[in-house]
Image (cartoon, rainbow, N blue to C red; front, side):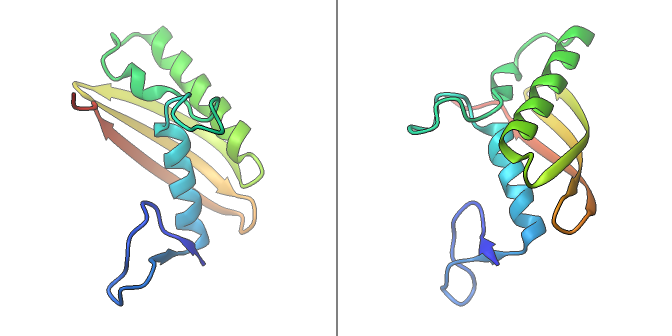
Length: 121
């Protein structure tokens, strides 16, 4: 069992735990939505996709974001997952990222959808 993300307490007022598959999903979410420079001791950690929420859509931008996301996932989570496909869509002020991956430990294939809205000032 692993600590759940974000950190919270369960119904028994204990630290919430989660399964290995959910823990891996939480790690993917952290890589996707952490801006490089946000973590003190790991300034290069993250993918930087949140900066692209308001960027104009174009095929070139979509290809760049997909490449960047796949590279970040392989760099930080390559020991845990095999990334099979990444699809990024920007809709108004939100960003949706679909990641198809295989958990190395269990060989479980998962299609994860991750969504974030634009940060509020």
